[in-house]
Image 1 (spheres, rainbow, N blue to C red):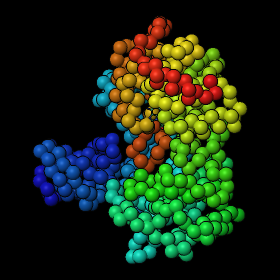
Image 2: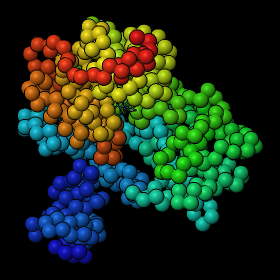
Image 3: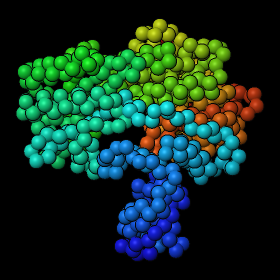
Image 4: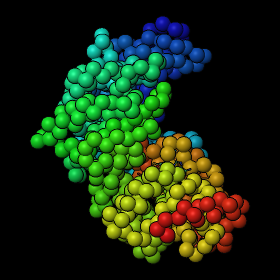
Length: 489
Ligand code: SAH
């Protein structure tokens, strides 16, 4: 097939990124905005030797699994790649995605299929996000708020996103009104001109507390402008529980959203609180917090179940962030050690432990792959690992850390992952020498309507032999630096 050719095809499969896959004359075509079972007329936009990319021209006959996308701008936005697919099929898609990665990248056989449980879904797969980061822009000289179209940096005007709480729209309208009154322009990345960059809005779903934090490109906003912002936002108060208003300063000419050039607190304590299960967490504007609290509770519940704690175990929580998983597990463990690279997050973790009166958790700032082996070598009994939990960012754990974990030989490893491709790569390494095997894989739908899938995996040690001592070469200077950082322990 060639560019501009027209074909009518049946969509037989979908890629892990949510594009439909069909065939015409033995040629494979990838088509956005289609779902399995659709018959579509498409136009080839780009042709390679055996495959190509085509654009949907006409939906000839819709799949029985196609639903009407409720969002009017879902196509232009591109954030909800699966909105046209029934929710039940979305959950199936995610399980298949995990399975595909475990087999193709992880090298696991067909027998892994029975270990992969059905995806845990939501009863209400919209309005689940507690956090919105909305960019400002200008259209015909007028300030607008919306979202970036596809992978571009042009902003499409839209004040309500169906994934976030309805009341965020009212906040946005107040902000636009305030900015207009104060003659604030939208920041332009190309020129570095303008003031208003983004707004971060967060809500504690269990507490109802809302945080509003505009990101601005100046340290010199007038007192009158700040006062007006607080006044207008707090006027929403009878209806909305806005408890924290602050300004984040980002002076850099970059597309990184949150700045490190200052945080100006205008109203409230500078943070909101939320509760997952029995644990309460303080969330400040810069700290990482899971975006879907309803599913997070199910995810952590799965991690707790897989950890199989009896109260006698020493548990490591690597990549612990503000200590969310550590504190969730602490009541069932003897001791929990958390490691995280961001110092502010560790401070939050310690405060969260204190707020919840948890005394059997200690947190360390540092790289997981360096801090854990160093501490273990300093006192192999105290820092033993009965259970290791990892929750790395998308890039996964890396061989170095996996090597350390294997040498410490915990009875169980619980791998929480937001990227099934790197998960598969890491599980292959962990299971390579036959000492660990997959006990269960639980996909959890943290991001309904999108192609992303979270998974919680249990690895069990085969046999009872614990390795004697690790032989890793650890830099002693590094070790003392880490000991100097120790807190609570
Ligand atoms: N478990 C937490 C956070 C998971 S996000 C929760 O559920 O909320 C991943 C975390 O890993 C981030 O907080 C990030 O700062 C941290 N991180 C990234 N690289 C790291 C490394 N090499 N060592 C330790 N932590 C790291």
